[in-house]
Amino acid sequence: MKSTLLIVILVSFQMCTIAQVADSCYQKTQSKSDVEKLEPIMCIPNGYYIVDVYEEDLNADGRVDKVTEWFKEKLNNGDTTFHSVYFQMRDSSFSHFATYDNLTQLYFDLHSQSTDVMLEDSILNEIKFKYQSYGDLPTFYNGGFSVEFYTDAAGYKRLFFEFSNGRSDFVLRKEQDWLAPQTSTWTEGEQLEEEVIYSEEEGISVKNFKILEYLE
Image (cartoon, rainbow, N blue to C red; front, side, top):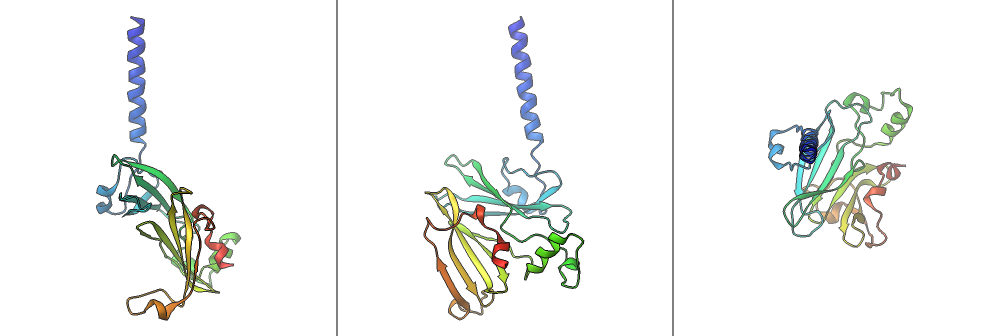
């Protein structure tokens, strides 16, 4: 009788635990069209929402992976945009690979972006004055992604991070300096000023990438 009671208690506890885990998976989206793209594993903290879901074969294994882009529902100066990468497995399930907080610049509202506005937070104020533009987002493609931003020295810079099976990581493979962002009316030869290629071994990990180091 005691054994039966213990089994019932354990089963009840397990069911309760599973329910709590399921209930804690917060998946608010900015757009209804993104809801159907989400997998059960794609959870974010309460108070945030998912603003985009990208679908690309990021590690070039023949399966389409997903990236959720998310940030606070009520953004304040200095807040971060996050990108969570999920690889698709052979059984079509998804596994969380990494969440990055360094693929975009920090958020500043339109008023604060003005060079005439001084912020009370001296650290944020210093960061803000290093930024040359706002709103640049990473571009995801087969095998990796690129990060774009402006610098005083090089103009428009693009960094390409590609997945390395040997390092099981996204590593910097190519760095480009442009006179201006590439558009349909400009050819690469006219606008591309410089390009540096890195080997798989020498390229830095995206985990060690810091936009501010390029803006010094």
